[in-house]
Amino acid sequence: MDQMKHMAEKTAEPFLDKLKKDPNNPDLLNQVGNLYRATHQFKVATGYYEKALAVDPKNAAIRTDLASCLYYTGDIDGSIAQLEKALTYDPKFTGALFNLGIIRWKGKKDNAGAVATWEKLLKVTSDPQQKEKLEHLIAQVKQSEQT
Image 1 (cartoon, helix red, strand yellow):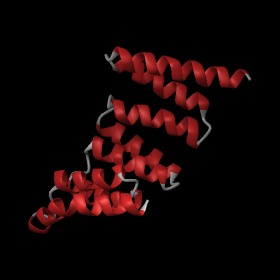
Image 2 (cartoon, helix red, strand yellow; image 1 turned 90 degrees about the vertical axis):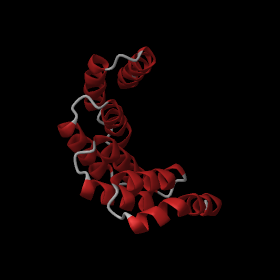
Image 3 (spheres, one colour; image 1 turned 90 degrees about the horizontal axis):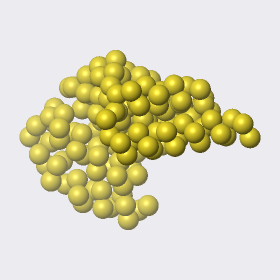
Image 4 (cartoon, one colour; image 1 turned 120 degrees about the vertical axis):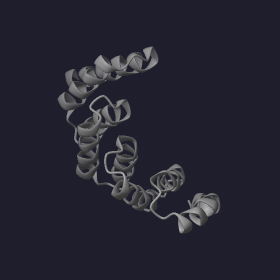
């Protein structure tokens, strides 16, 4: 984990230098958040996503990334709240819908909520691979209820 932290800090240096000149750039803040999230530095990433959302509050993609970090730090309810807020800005945002289903299923043990969320996603996605994955997940959740 220390190695990943060091890698994130090294990789983030050029972005952090740019942020010194442009501290309210949501794209830069998001990129730094993504670097820290990719190296499992979820609390650090959360701070960058929150700063980006302070500048660009309606950005569903950044909100979805923030929700992932909150989930991994144990804030299940905060994660769900961020995903639901993202969906108020973009009701068909596939990343938020997919993650919301996963977190309802795994984090809240809300099988019905997960299935309902993924069924909404099935209606809006045109990606055949994603549809197949969703159908598999829905079947898996429904099967687990029967055992």
